Image (cartoon, rainbow, N blue to C red; front, side, top):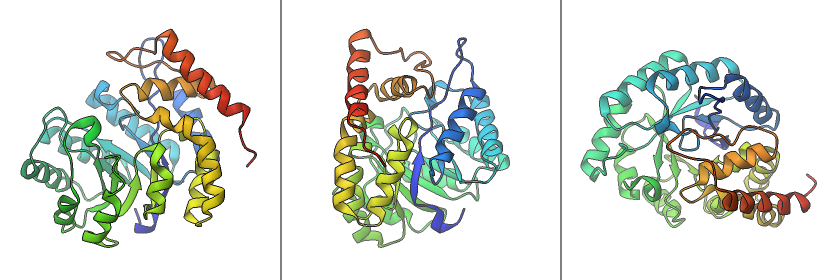
Length: 299
């Protein structure tokens, strides 16, 4: 994967399940083409929105093989590594590399709140298992372990780490990372409703959530921000914000999958222990979508 490919809109695709909660490859193939037709720059599979912890190791490799084959080199395929044990993370990295994945998005160890020494050792150990470039994924809000700008400064010594998905929801982090590391990393926005702020501060890419239901608006917003057409970008962003707010909170997976269903692009079905939204929650999401559609701008 070339350095210049670490930019643009990368949808964090959902995992679609059938009635038996098995993998629905037909639904995912249709949805993939919808994203590619809209002009996305790459795809992220097996991320938080894809319900990674609810998938077993065999399913993760099957999904990786499926998406690599279905994309067929049209855009980069980046697979998330989110494991609770170093040996499992290394094994998946090796298997996904053999399947042809273009990049990885690597979280600190799951379930265990590692200290800074342990976190760096884990990330380095996983990187050592593969020659595939890696986006470091920082999401302390959801997972408890925080990669500080000083950690990225230390990790910059490893050339396999090429990008950062910054999801701390603290936009101060972006200029601080740039102060310590310059242009060493491609910084990606990881929180939908901070996209405008992140790009104004120098982000190059966006690992996006609501893009799964509104890809054309997401791509257009990115391009306006990339081209520094800030007034036009702000107008589109302010329309989009009520939807983008659905990307945060403990039920962001259920919320976004329901939006996909409302838009005729997938199923709201989630794999237990998650349950679909209760009636009141679902009505709130549906009302947000309907208000947005009533004011949907012409692109």
